[in-house]
Image (cartoon, rainbow, N blue to C red):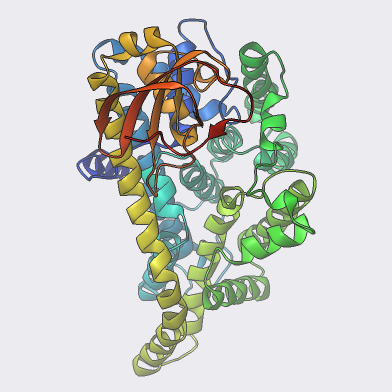
Length: 484
């Protein structure tokens, strides 16, 4: 497993050579908060919901900004992408293990030769693993989230690794990995609590670990938010802020959430996952049965949360999707194994490809748009940094007045100017500097005020840097950039 983890980090480091290496809104906020923590200046207002796992790493990387401001963001990107690659590797490992014909023996190493156990043979294990990894790769947003430094793919990798460690008999390792998952997604807390009860009863030697993690979990989620915003529950309120795109604004939010979750995997692959679950039930494979039940519970939980005001963001479902990819791999492999001859197996595999191909073809444009968005966002990030430099540098820009920028780039601007996130894009300042871009990847531009004295300081790509003086009467505002 060490080689797998090392390989993931090597791939993540090499991925920085690709054009799409820019962070997004949430990940930039984590980098900003990581810099503030060693300075005892944590301020979480104005950003996304607090999340302890990434900020732990960005706080460790923060001192390296004294060498170069670009180092901490890139190091976090390496960690996040390594976790994303780990999720793909673990999907392969777990699916190839669970496809064994008998119930996996707890305590048996996952590196055991599959030919040594009762099962369909090594080829069917490889089929399951490759399918699971491939399904994960084509899951909507999976590649985009890996590229932009989000934590959901990483959390999925940790979750699948935890399942493997449980099967290996290393329950302490499994629980700690589950604890790390819970530092990324609060929806996982009920699962960790259930496993904690199991550990407390069945593994008394790990009670200190279990108790420590359960005490630490609410502390690292609530105390920093309390310090940074004055409200320990600010993260939950932020998550229930109901932006315009939130499913909670729909007539039936829970139904919209179910519909969204169903769209995150191709229909034939969902049927294959269901077949894998049915096969696991017939074999009394409690790991597969538990995974299927966990997926169902997760989807219901997120749907209830959406009904209660949460946004139903697709990211909320991705850990369940990660588990489902493993079931899909098992299902495909077991379908192929229904044939007793090689030609029959090839025919079944070809039929599955033919059935899935039209759905994949319809999904292909979305994948292209995701790649385009990742590359475009990275370019805009680099151009924004250049725009700050050409406007005189961070200190000069901050001294000119309050700074406004497109909403999606507020945390990045805070990082560049070494300011709290809430200091960016304040309204009502009589003198301010506006960074505005009208581009398909730039998001909502800041408001420009008619009648103000506007001077163009510089332009870099789609970015225009404007110095705005004066506050005209209320209502004379527009999001359209001032004329050249």
